[in-house]
Structures are given as structure tokens and as C-alpha cells.
Image (tube, rainbow, N blue to C red; front, side, top):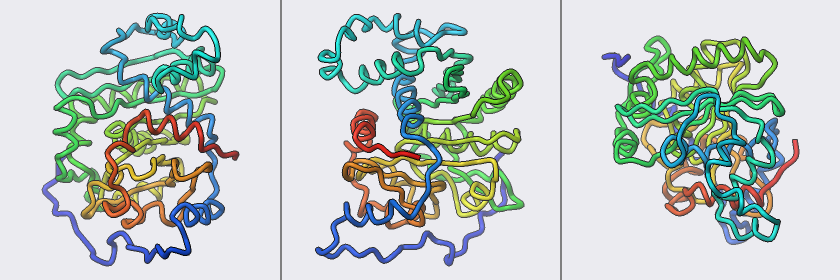
Length: 330
């Protein structure tokens, strides 16, 4: 619902532009490494890699590879006509990042089942729900920007009020793509039914780029409808909402967000004015180790165009390559 209520602003609530020491005596890599010990992380590298690979593959699902109800990931891989390429480890090293992601799915979550897949022609929203018995996970996976329609949603920087009492405003384009034709309600109902069937399973919402923003917004809406813990793992996500959104999101006891960002990814710097990042930022590609930004996770400066200016660092393939190198233990 779009509210006519004006968004209240408070200049004192602008993202703090921390004074960061950029002197020659302290490289950016060493500066970030010094932050790694300041945060704790409860999501495993293995879980994040699983989710990135599923996110990678949804770009083709429903387009190059047909959706089949109750599809298994094993059958999905077989229909992709590349299984013969996985003959040996030597071949794997020569595969593209997308094909390596397919190998990872085959080797680690091939028991997964596609429980639902929404492809809305009106908004070009595409999102799948998978369940893995081996990993005891329910995954909601959003596809990122691909079509002209997607980019129109991305470029619409006006805000929509979703909670006037708490001054919660979110990006109108993201909100419209998620909620048009009540797609978010369909997803929530499906997740609720799966939780009834698999009450001990973890619930994850994930996506890359636009999909990262949609997964963040959906994770918040879902956390208001179920008591279960909801974990959002976003990749290359832009900012989603205002300061009221940030406060409401981070007050939710059953909601956790790990925001994976790669090097100087330019998309993570936008929208920049009166928009706020949420959750715990994990930066990859700045060395052999992942960097947990802690207090700088929502810093305007850390995710400004002055720091984040590379279009190529935004590619899903770059996230995959650097996540393979940047590992951590919980």
C-alpha cells in the first residue's frame, strides 16, 4: 500500500560518514582485516556458497531450463545437458563459474526439490522455493536484474510507506515488483505450509543484485508473519529503505541478514541519499579472508561511490570466484 504520509527525515540520522584512515601506512586490505575480529558470524561459508550457487542458477530457471513442479535439482542438472562435462576434476577447473556452480549443486545439494516457482509476466518477478532434506533448509531464491523491466524497477528510487506508525519507507520499485499480483502473499503462504511439514528446517531468503534487495524486503515481511527465525543472505544488494526501515528491520528478533559484498561493487553504493543498508556486511575479494565489517556494515562512506565504483565486481561470476577463495569458520 502506498501511503500519502510524508516521510519524516532527521539529518542527525544520516548514515554516519566515519572518518576512515586511508593513510599510506594502512592499506585498505589491512584495515578491513582489523575489523574481521570485531564481529561474530553465525552463517557458515558452506551455507553461503550453497545459496550463491542456487542464486546463480535461477537466472536460467524458467527461461533456458523449463520449470517442472516438484522438480529435483538432480533432474534439473540432467536437463541442463552439461552433466557429461563433469567427467573429472581436471575438466571442472576449466568450467565457467556458472558451470562450477552447477557442479557444486550436484555435489552438495542434489537432494533439493523445487517446491514452487513464480514467474510473473506483469513484473518479470522470478522466485523459486526449494527444500533440502540433507541440509534441512527451506530456501526462497530471487532472480536478479536481467530484463529492461527489472532495470525500470531498479531505477525507480521513490519510496513507498509500509508502516506509517514507525515511518518505514522502502524503495517503490522493489516493493512493486515483490507485491504486484500479491506474489509476496503467495510466497508467504507457501513457506508457512512448508514450515508445517518441516518444522525443524531453517528458512533462508537469498538473491543477487535486484534479487538481493527483494530477498531482504521479503525476509522482513516474512519475519512478521511467522515466529521462525528467518535468515537473509543477499549478494550485491543495493540499499532498500529509509532509517525507519533500518530500525524496524534490525529490531526484529527473528530476523538476521548477512549481506555479502564483493570488492568495489558499484551497485552496493546505491541508492545513496536517505537510504540505509541493513544487517551484517561480509566483504569478499579483498584478500584471502572474508572481512566482517561490524559497525561499518551500514556506513555510508564504506558503501559510497568513492569506495564502490566497479561495475565488473557486481557480476555473479565474480562473487562466485572470490567466495571460493574467501572462507571462514563459525
